[in-house]
Structures are given as C-alpha cells and as structure tokens.
Length: 589
Image (cartoon, rainbow, N blue to C red; front, side, top):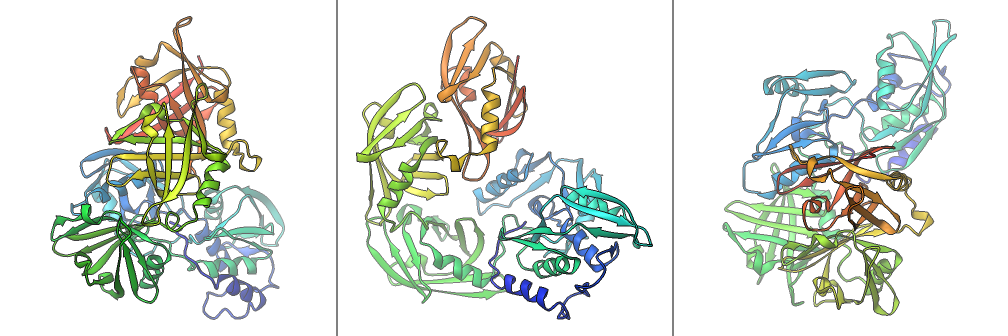
C-alpha cells in the first residue's frame, strides 16, 4: 500500500545524488554518469527496475497476511460469519468495516478455496486449502520483507532495446505497465544487455514526478525513494501502524468529535456524544460540550512495546481520566482502549468547526448538489435519491427531479459549539425541513445530520456546466447510455436471480437526467431519474431512481459502475441487508 508520508528532504537528497554521484557509500554500487548506457540484466540498476515494477502483494494483507503475493479477484471470504465476494481493492474496505463494527469481538476471516495467487514476478499458482496458503505466507516476514519498491512508480509507456555481446541492437520493446516491464526482465538471461529510451518519468509516493535522463539518474532516483514512505507491509489494512510523532501531529492538526465512550463496560456515549475536543501542542486540551460550555484538561503521550499510550487528565471530565492505548488510526478516526471495558472513538472534523459560514455558502452555490441519501427518523427516503439541489442568492434553493421543481429557502449559521448548520425549508417537502448539522466535508461531498437522531442528508457535488470539471469517463458513459433503448439482461441480489421481474420493461436514458420506463411495447411510461458522476472517493457511480413501489423499487440506488461496451452496461451495489452485492446489467434489445 502506498500510504503517503511527508518526506521533506527527498527532493534535496535526490538533487544531491545527481550532482555528486560518487557519494554512494550507504547504497549498493550504482552506475556512474559516464558509464555506457547499456546495462546487464543482472546489474544493480536492472535489479532496482525489477523491484519497482514488481507486483505489490501487501494491499490485501487483511486477507492473506502475506506481502509477497496477492489473491486474484474475484474470490469469496467469510468475515465474522458474513460471506462476501471480493471483486476489487475497494471491497477490502468492507472487511475492515465488518471487523470494526464490534470492537470487542474476535475477528474471524475464512477464505473459500480454491484461490489463485500472483507473486511479485507475476507468476501464478492455485491454492487449494488454508494449509497451502499458510505455508507460503510464512515465507513473507511481518514488517515488509517483500521484494517490491512501492514509494516510486514508472510512468508508462517506456521503450527498451536489446543488444548482443558486441553491443549491436537486436530488438526493441515498448512496455505499458509494471507487469509488462517485470516480465520483460524475467525473460532475460543474466548477461543480456539492454538500454532504455530516456528520458523516463517516475512518480513519487506524494504524487510529484521526477524525470531522469540516464541509468545513473534512474538508479539514484529509485534508491533514494525506496525507503521514503511507509509501504504498510504489515498485516493490518489501511495502515493501523503509526509512530509517536505521527500520532502527536495527527491529534493536534484538527478538532475531534467524540463518537463513542465506554467506561467499565458501560456505555456513556449519550452523555458525551459529539463533545468537541481540541488538542494543542503545549499539552492542553479543550473540550466543548453540545451547549458550548468549556472544560479544560491536559494530555501527554509515550511509546511502549504495545504502541502509543495517550494520557488524559481533567478536573471534571472524570470518565476521560485514563492512560489510553491508541489501538487504531484510520482516515478521520482514532480509537482508544483501556483494559476493563473502556473505549473512546474520536472523529476528525477539520472543516466543520469555527469556519466562516460564507465559505460553506460559496461552496453550495458553486454547483448543483445531488442527493445520495436521506434518512428521516432512521428510515431511508429512497424516493429522493438523485434529486438535485440548486442553492442560489437571497436564500433561495430549488429541488428538482428533472421534471418537477420545488422552491424553498436555505440559511447557513453556526450552533453553540461553532458547528456549521444548514437550515432548509420546503413547503411541499417536509422531509428536508430541518436544521442540518454539517458532520463531514470532503472535496465533492457534504454530509449533514441532526445529533442523536436518525436524520441524515448526504449530497454529492456535480459541476457539469464547468468546462474545468468535465470528466471524460463520465461523459463516455452518459453518451453510451443515451444511445437508445435498454432492457435488464440480469438482476441478482447476492446469488438470487430476479431478472424475470424486469423483463417487461424498456429503459431510455434521456436529457435532463430523465429516465423513461415503458411497460411492454405500447404500455404505460413512467419517469425516473438517472445520473452518472464520479464521487468524492473517485468512484464512477450511476444513480437510478425508478420509484419506491413495485419491483422497479429494487433499481433505485446509487450503483457502482463496473464495465461497459456499446451495448452492455454492468453495475453493482453492496447490500447491507444481504451482506452481498446486487448486480444489474443493462443490454440493448
């Protein structure tokens, strides 16, 4: 896993290496700038190239516990008694979520065999049982003994040339990805000579690019970068390992909301839910309750064999007074634990406190916002999926499904804690008439809720009218979907096929996001909503709203885009109810 860690001296090291290539005592012997541009397949430079292009086996360590190979998709696992199919890297997050759902249970994961695994050199074998897998996994040491270099990547395509012993060119090949490059080197003999068509571009772990013009520059760039980030090759998923420095930086960079508190195995969450904690570098911590009252305390940390311990001391907030074991860090969340049934879960809220309300006002007015999900008293209001908000000046907001438009009012304020609030009022849509507290702000997504209730609103930003935000993949999918009539060729809920429920219907995806659904050849037609967008996680999504009644209600969802041809579109959506994926395939009749 290529988790990004700031490594501020990398650029200086890289430039120094290029200027003074003789200072290589701490590295393997690397080629000098004046050496012949051909290299032997067994050279140090060739070995660095192989390691950089090797298959990363660490991303699925939550499943196989081994960094030197990865399981090929798709495969099936049983997680704490729930069977799920893993089709992509993103699906591994589902395993983590199941593990995290109950922090006091014993997590059990069973792989359904046989499975195929791919090694670092892209060779594959079939594994028939757990014993065979464990025998191979034992060869991969915890902590990163895998062979691949993950902190730097090649930017393709790259052209390479082969030579005979007299350095006469015998051939050339252009490679387009890591696998092709690794297999090219795998097919060479030790004494074979090759050269690279420079310049070559490499991308570092932090997204910056480096251009190299010779073998010596290439070797130096890889050598300097290979240990510049945490490859997260341990058996945790999503980088649960961390240093004392990293934790101290993390806890002081943003305010934190209390999401869960347990003392002596008794839940105290209701009392402390969404208290705001602000840690400062001088060891002070300020807690603001839901009414805005302030409680002050201190904090300190130390590193032990178990990991980081966080000590909290308050005069009045006694339920927090413990030395807590920091047992997990994940994006936007910290989990604390102490023996005897004590637990605290904190959520990062960098963007939703003490902000100028004008900032959120401007964000809302930049583009339209599409409803991803609405919960009213704990019940999902599926009929509003795909509806579009448009926030305008003078406190005017519209809500549209592409055919009907409702007008209401909106106001941005702050509550006693300094938390941003969106107040909505629609005369004909009382479901939305609340003062929604901002709980999550991402690049293109906003999440609002009402604390302590089952009310939640999640909206996704869509900027179709802005040429700077045109997404080629989104446009291509839209154009194909608008290219005629479609029928449902397959619909499955887990392993249960229900395609027959949709055989009478024909679908047309039209302008203004209006979906027309016709029963039979000349039957009645009803309107729905369809949208294609890329969400804040970078996933391509297809929103469908076919109503909430009858069999068509099963299609109302925010579907993950899987694949597409000119006459076939495949979508999937994870069902919490069935703990499996629903699959929807459209084809042209």
